[in-house]
Length: 318
Ligand code: SF4
Image (cartoon, rainbow, N blue to C red):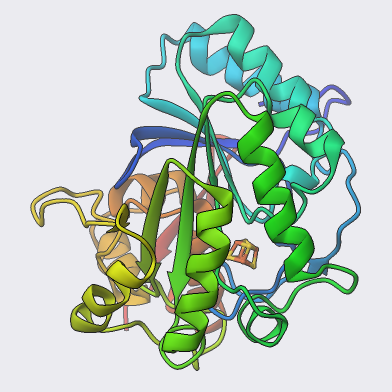
């Protein structure tokens, strides 16, 4: 994969990967790991390295479009093309160009997974307007809980975030599914759930999807709610709230399956694999794979091999 300056371009699209909500979803990753407006306690990508609200072209848009073009030319198919990835996609200042390009080349619907923190900005809402589905999140409705759970960049307030979600609902022509990530002991008190409900009622999303911590979080203190606690929280978040259901257990892409470093080692004991092989085999995001690979390399449990311009990893015999 050549970048325009002759360098090897970083892979910016991944999958399609099975997704609980979106079927087969081709991921597009427009910001580098981990560039975000938040540093959520539950983040599965680890701590935020670049905590910012500054919109910039964080990745070369031409590379993203080239990779999408080559995927389409290989007759790639997916249920959704989803902007998500290694941080907050709306930080990429050329997001509108990417979405516009996709909409001009394919009928595959475009989804954007966003933390919703920048939706109060008109330029962000304009960039998103051609998308088909927005999945923003809202985990808190009070300033203290917002700070505790989302650890936002200085200058962001929860009032501003809720206002941005309201404005999006009134401007945006597609569907809005609001995701609420509940963390035990942090944002699941009756008081916080009532405040969230008031905010949700004012936003009027098409769906409210309740989630909890299922992947290893950035902060070990972030614990999941039990199924019973989720069931108790559900009616408090509105009559249309749903718990995001896992896929059937026999579905390999079940995102609630806990992948561990040992799964990666087991896979590499069978044969050397690239990062992409690991992602495909275990149905995990490249950044999650990168986290396991870095830890296993540091422990000398796996080693690197370079072959035909590709990097492979293999298990080291004990
Ligand atoms: S969970 Fe999403 S919004 Fe929160 S820090 Fe991670 S990438 Fe950012």
